[in-house]
Amino acid sequence: MNEQENARLERLLEEIQKPARYIGGEMNAVSKDWAAVRSRFAFCFPDTYDIGMSHLGMKILYYLINQRPDALCERVFMPAADMADRMREEKIPLFGLESRHSLNEFDIVGFTLQYEMSYTNILEMLDLGRIAILAKDRPEEAPIVVAGGPCAFNPEPLAPFVDAFMIGDGEDVMHELIDVIRDGREARLSRKDIFRNLAKLEGVYVPSLYDVSYNPDGTLRSFAPNDPAAPGTVRKRVVKDLSGAVYPENIPVPYTEIVHDRMVLEIMRGCTRGCRFCQAGMLYRPVRERSMDRLLELADKLQQSTGYEEMSLSSLSSGDYPYLAELIQALMDRYKEKRVSVSLPSMRIDNIVKQSLEETQQVKRSGLTLAPEAGTQRLRDVINKGVTEEDLIRAVTDAFECGWSSVKLYFMMGLPTETDEDLMGIGHLAKKVVDAYYAVPKEKRSKNGVKVTASASVFVPKPFTPFQWAPQDTIDQVHEKQSKLRQYLKIKCVNFNWHESQLSMLEACVSRGDRRMGDVIYAAWKRGCRLDSWNEHFKYESWLAAFADCGLTPDFYAYRERPYEELLPWQFIDAGVSQDYLKRENEKAKKTQTTRDCRRGCNGCGLHTWGVCGWVNDPPLRDTDKASAPLFD
Image 1 (cartoon, rainbow, N blue to C red):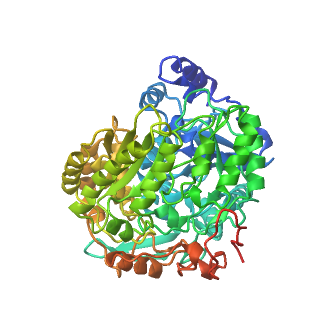
Image 2 (image 1 turned 90 degrees about the vertical axis):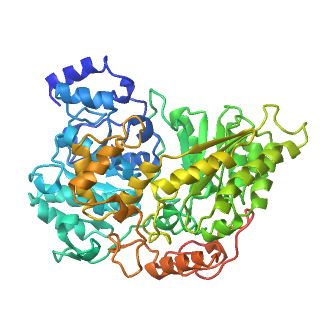
Image 3 (image 1 turned 45 degrees about the vertical axis):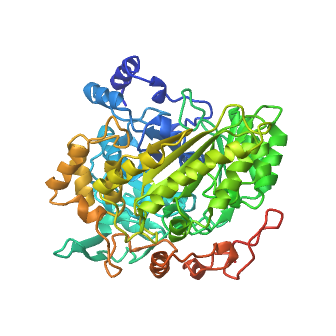
């Protein structure tokens, strides 16, 4: 950004909402001399500062890259609509917060893919950053655009825009990717030669080195490399030792309020439960735990470097951490006098630890969030949730006896085999939770009265899950079910929230889309779509017009059940969990058969062939007072 552009930006910051999103300079932000480094990485979060600054992955990679003396990493966020419009009017490019260098001045521009409905934001950010949106249009000197994160496990909808994807744990591949691009630039290699070298890295997919073709019915006919440097299968990267992995000891502390304004401890990664709808539970296998000593060390450093008064324990299933009670006790003993509270994320309802609840409410009591997912035991068995109604009532009773009065219950509608009885079951469960509060003796329960919030999202079939072949409910079906749930949840002390069905339909299209979905995303962006996950900016009719522009229909991607023999757009990626295992799980779901927790013994998901799964020898399910079994051979 030149002096004139910077001066215009300074004037603009006086006119727009929440200027603190764009000024940088926060405590613990890292500013480096551009001339003193060999690699300049722009970490781009395709949503606003408020959301992006809450993302743990960004903090990890920002810290990791900036630990290198030869590299720098700066943060870039999607501007809010008012700022984006004014930047175009004033001809101000999108920039890194730390130095205000334009996006097109960086060597590498990396996007994290957390949610499919942020994809138009990626195009908007590239355009604002003066980078050609289509990868094929970028000149030799242009930054190399990369992407990673959970949504990268189906990279095809973004293949026209991204030069290379990182599949799996970013900590494990980031240094290698930076080195290959730096060495290629310094050796004056062509972009294509750099891409060839990137494709040789395990866990890196370069779309331009692959060709696709389609059958007359629109299904995928073939997917194959067009260059010998590109592998036929791209295998995800896995951080094996989580305790030894890089984790930030300080993080930028924002000037303005963000969604999750607190320090976060990732206590474990992965999940052994095997819920059949859960993409993260499949993608982040195997389970890896941080040692309690390492977590306490990180907690001390983060608290000292940030001054935060709230700490959150993060993982997919925190109740499965073998030392949860001991960890919470140790954290409360350390920080009680400093009035630092400890909060737990959404918990499985079969492993709420009453002692942990009692400890965490000593400083500050937050709401309790539980996820039954389905209203009947039959449907919970279909999805392999592995919890019962008795588990739920026991969990909320424990919480009410500890003084909690606010409970959030998460459900999904539209799950495979769902019936009206399953929907009615949601109402019955919510009523039983209210009754559980009043069953607690008056002297133990909160005087604030009980508040139960039941939220029902729309099931979205995701790649690499047993339900990846399943159709989604149509919008009309979803509306009918939402209407029924409104009736079933007309219960005193119960509030009902639901998700936008149109947005969920588009999420299903993109999550299971092929490379042609990139054309739809591009057409939608050209029609003004951006910030699609924000209700005030979502343009459903423009998305439908974009499908028509491309000669495609949402029905093909969202509502069609896919046969096992169909070639799936993401099938060239090895996520560790085999297609055969996913098929077996899908068939068991149809028969209402459950699968045991991996901690009770190996279920043959495929990871054992990698030599990284610690449950192949049928170890017993661990109690919190037992030592951890080795997770790796």
